[in-house]
Image 1 (cartoon, rainbow, N blue to C red):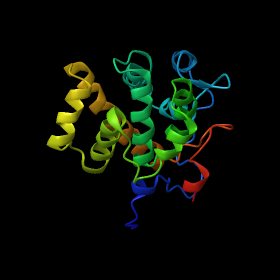
Image 2 (image 1 turned 30 degrees about the horizontal axis):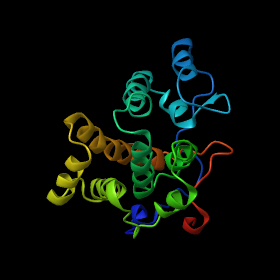
Image 3 (image 1 turned 120 degrees about the vertical axis):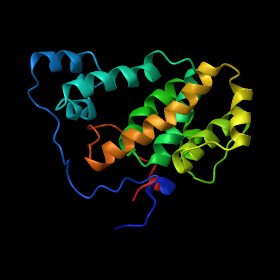
Length: 198
């Protein structure tokens, strides 16, 4: 068993093709769910297509994940910065790649996106707080008192505090699934920055 911690360097550990293939010919109900979900180049993403083997799971997962993407109470830039750092720390290249374009749209420039894949990068101001939240929750599963206090300074409202905790937790959970079943990135979806590739 490997003792290497992929979360420290942001590399996925897959060594072969998908362990569970995406559904190719879903029934009408599942097809409708996939059609209204996340798309890449006009087609449903590979992870939802794989979850389509379990229709109830796909339905609940889509609702839960949709909260963060469509109805987030966090500023969009904060949400994406937290997402990129969390997906990097959790070692899920699939989700990291899918959020690069979104991060760019909400004002996270290329320099910052690349810096987020450097474990020693701590950021400044509110960014530093969000980076610490991602690092601690992915690494230890709990925030230190100092980071919690800093987070409440950035987000005084409990709803935003809770969401800031759930985003890293969500990506920690789905990283385990996506990496284990080896979900493949769709053609054209970027991966890690080159200096962090295997």
